[in-house]
Length: 145
Image (cartoon, rainbow, N blue to C red; front, side, top):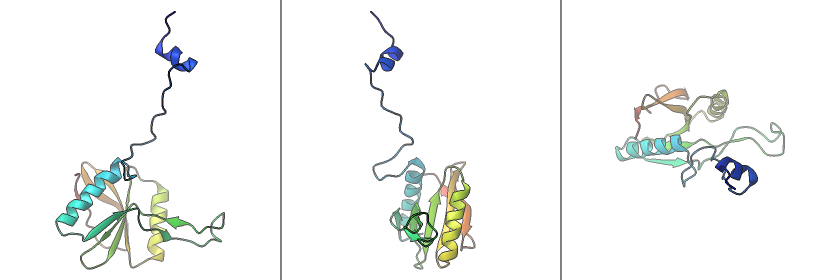
C-alpha cells in the first residue's frame, strides 16, 4: 500500500517539527537585531561609540502598584551604546513599528531624561531613526552591514 507524504504526516508516521516563529541567532537576537549589532560594531571600530551591549540593561518603568501582579513593569531595550562623551543611548530595533514600542520608549525617556532612546528600523538598506526621545539629532544612519 502506497501513501502520500501528507497521509503519513496525518497518521503520525512522519513527524514534522513546527516552524520557528522567527529566526534566532545563538545570542538570542533575531535577524534585524543581529544586523544592527554588526552596524554598532562598525560604529565602535570607527570610534563613533565606545561600547555597546545587547539586552543587558533593564529599566524599571513603573511601580508594582501599576502592574497586575506584584512585579514592577520593566523595559529591556534591545541595545545600549556608550558615546565618546560618556552618554548612554538605548536602541529598540523594529522591523515594523508598533505603538507599544513607542509608548515603552517614551515612558522610559520621561523617567530617565539623561538617557537617549531611539527606535530604529531598516529602510531601503539604511538604518534610520523612526522615533527618538531626549535627543536633538540621533546619529544612527548607516548602511546595512
